[in-house]
Length: 253
Image 1: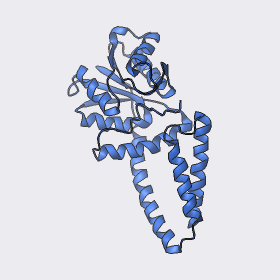
Image 2: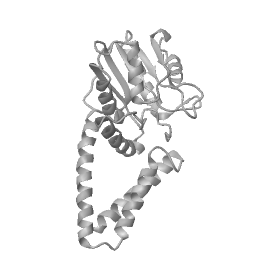
Image 3: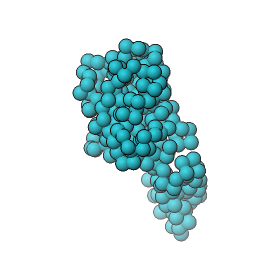
Image 4: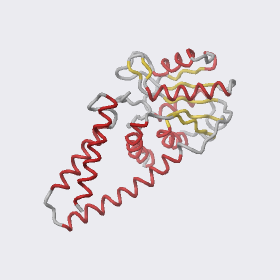
């Protein structure tokens, strides 16, 4: 039974090294979780516990895995089965800006939005995100400028530059539209879509459509695992939305 802990421990450490390699950082987004989890599993696997202790630990781990996979299936399902349709407005949820530079996750959201806006030229767009640590300008301003460079008419762009979390993105953006009656598309990375939909429902949005963007494949497991904890906090209605996945202040890009 101890081999389970040894194998999981080694896999977690290896994945941490993959994240370090791709991000060039020892503490990129959520990466330390894998280092700590791997270390704990290796310690348990090497410890001289009796068989009944390992059996109890495996039972706890099994229950944890069941809960994890149930939530992950909901997260993953929100990444697919969508189709572009005309909306009154789309909201692009912000992500980290390094100085004035658009990071990879945010660029993917913006590029996805550009394709949508070109298909539906009458749809307005709200770029949502305030200014955080390490950012020279508000995320909304960086996003709006990027859309303009991509040929989107400035008159279509509404800049919401106060929010610092997913919940605030949707709450403050709702002041520019009618969340109960308008058809609203949410643009974010696929892994973040399910939580965004949950929060949108809590914030009074009645007609929400998914416009998911892709994310870096090397970080996908990391993102999905982090979202598990964030979704649990939303389901338990724990506020504020402290995980801030939309902002990625320790983003690896």
